[in-house]
Length: 569
Image 1 (tube, rainbow, N blue to C red):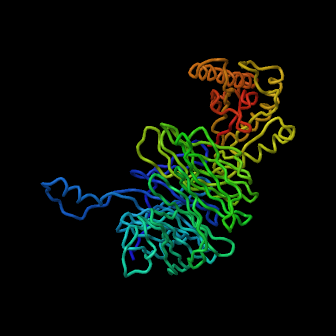
Image 2 (image 1 turned 180 degrees about the vertical axis):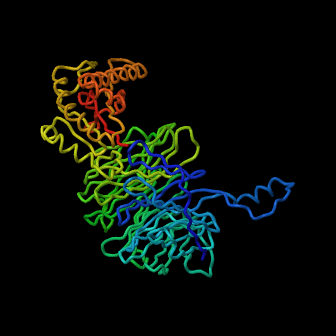
Image 3 (image 1 turned 180 degrees about the horizontal axis):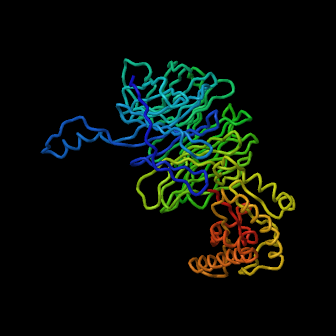
């Protein structure tokens, strides 16, 4: 067993976009987060990897052979397990990395009854690791286990007896002296190990075919049996395998999903109705990943099998269920040049309700999501700054509508006060206010006509009523206000114009709409308020990048609008 020492890094660069709850932690070299959970004190914890150099203890030496030199430094740089804890104000309260004799990666975190953690991962040379940490991230014990072969852990799942199940894969062994590997037939086999809540290993078992089998995820059923999600790869195909085993690891049934293409499974969860849901990526005819969701029961009967077709390649790495049966999934969406983090919302029948993309013009992805006790969600993954080659650890808090939540303030809840201030307008379906403090007009008389940006009489009358409430509210709370954005929007059409011309014409139109509203509100204030507004007003045109979609079709009338967003300090 390797002894692990946790140490606190000096606080590294912490970036967030205005007052959005988007925390990016930058350590040297490439970093990432793979799992996230909520602590009993309401804070968010996430685990992943940070990378650094090891200090060499070898005295300086002259090499005459380049290969000898490369061998001497091959283990000088690598990843270490990393734990973050973030409070409601988006501040780091724990930022720790494990210092092990071998480089290691953390891929899963499970809460313990004492507000501590089980953390699962593996060393880069093929050993598996489980740590038990206290609430401050200090090691209670470390278990290193596995085979003499190359092992990888894919997930660590919580069991109802307080223990955990590690799932992953192990290279097949041909040893005649170890009965554990008698079923190993292929390149890799599914590898499961169960631990008690005290960290005692209860059993380890392998399952496999003559092909390449890898354990991906697992979940415990209401009767204590375990559903295992895995892949079987052969030739050019990658198929999905579902297996049900007893609490002791004995196989009950096995089901293969064979296709002519490639299916990549990501996650399996138990639903509130005691059925199960699997999230997969399925290659379409254009060789693009598409989100596929399969719902099945304990007897392997398929209840729903649906593919969510999207314009760009998409996949959900994790998915969770809300108390009302709706779901949130996170993952990636990519085109030829860019990968963004993806958030999707579904109803209880697996119909997609909404999606949002987040990130810069580089590589960004959400690897995990957890639903918080206030019905918000926390997503964790990777963010890469524009024009950077280094990835960073990333945690985002999301509202129920998939918008990014704002950081808590210690004195005032702006959202709740806005709801109270505009309760009559909300009840009359004049406007909606989202938890990210964006305000949208929804009365059709407040939308712009095609290609128009001049304000109508009705728009002017309503803007007077609206600004007479909003501006004094912002002035009253000016200590907390960073900006009021007024964003112009358009629908996507513009006659028969080609793409470049259509975008630029719509961009100019959206800026004109923003300016019309901004200037009208500004001119109707007294000089003192005008001087203050110059510090917070921001106008912009977003063309048709945020057009309104209804049932997968653009609602052109609703897209011709302006929107407001309050940004806090």
